[in-house]
Image (cartoon, rainbow, N blue to C red; front, side):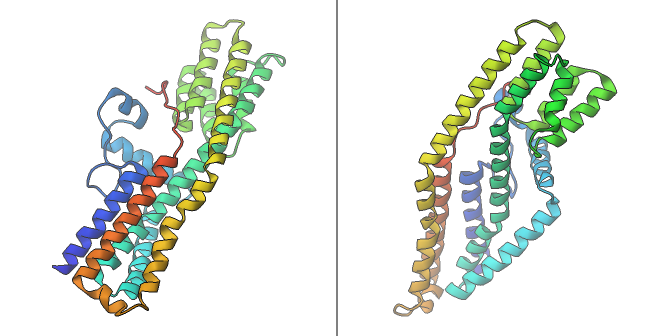
Length: 302
């Protein structure tokens, strides 16, 4: 019975953390389906299968397989459980801490993905200006300019441009090529740039230079605004780390006060520890959610 209660409490902590930090819904171990509205379908694929495929693809882009990710989670769970049991001497807090530790690889993956997106976003104003120069002063065609700039783009974006260029060489269908590129890049700025180039390629016109210049200026202003917001949050992000450090230090100090470790081993002590762990996880995830800058929604990926 105690093991079942420990498992239920630990899984509750895991569900609370993934809901607040990653936006997952439902009682599943992985991401659940989003609402069925049209906006959710366009932004996140179709149903549960699309979400799982997207998450699996993102894990693969990190250079690891889902099986490897699961192995790392099991190791983290084991280490966290062992460390917590050594401190508290009870199964309930140990499993709760182990479950929270097992979510660390998922959180790390999300942080790396966010960092890659930020670096790619920083490069788009320069890439748009290069496309503008290629199609204007150098007289390149729209597809040729797009692929030449993509070859010199950030490393994170090059595989998407290479796949799109292969599609163009095989089919010479620029609309299909642009759709493939948008799918791989999965970025609102990429969508706007590709759709602008697609319209210019299909119907022509002399205002492509003006539209690209306006798009580059808009992206530059958005990028500068995000950098200013991130700079203002630096102190708050540093203080957020104390949400984990201070309670952990207090738990270690508690070992040497009064009955110490024996108090942690009582049913009431274990319940109090699990409640404290849940509070720490909730505060950590809630603070991260408040500090998260809003992402621009995609509108061309229907």
